Image (cartoon, rainbow over all chains, first blue to last red; front, side, top):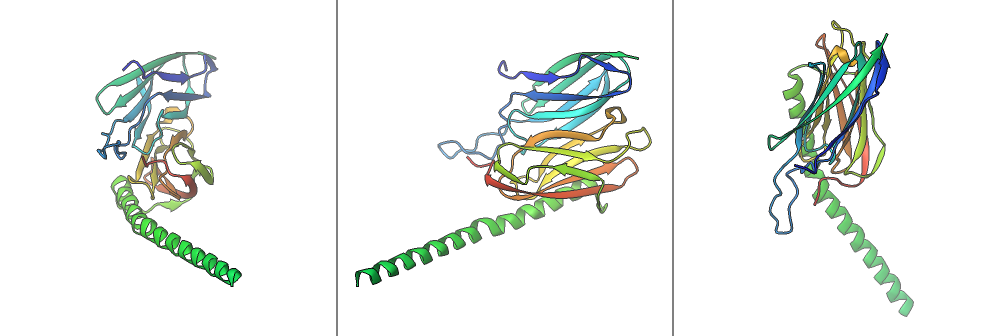
Length: 109
Length: 156
């Protein structure tokens, strides 16, 4: 879907061993599956149910999301960087779509 | 005569109003709140098994009062080193007054360097939010925070 765009905020540079904060936001309705439309029919659930972050191909962390997470899910966390490389982020939609984003970081000694 | 009638009418309206509020409150809140609490306890058992969580170590920062239950910020953190042989594996967030008890589970690795994450959640009503942390040594820690909600976030 064209209207779903992940936004990420990762520092461009860091020192070896530094703790960097990563902030992510993805535009998504996170339809809970509990709401009803004007005719009283339940609107089917459609949420992002999983988020993953990896660094240079190695998994760093993962989050399982339930319908109680707000629309346009915001997730922030920390990573201790030891080397330059690329962060890979992925959001998994209920409908099977995977939204991806990447960000490079330069790490100096 | 006329003042007497007015006073009576006012009293009657007050009493009826208060009665209706009390009845409505009892009907709407009490049974569902109990059911939701049981749901949260059941889910907690599914997540951590027979282990008994201890108080402490895990911190949950949320506003005491949320004006809008649609999006309530939360930060959960565990006071723990993040070395390969001693780290926080996962923090589960549960809500004991939402239609579904599960909120999210954040799984860490030692590469995180700090066991902390933030997100935003929905709250259907005033309730307790639970943060449950599982450590690499198998211990489980837990904390609860009450958040008062002015406008619920799951209706529609």
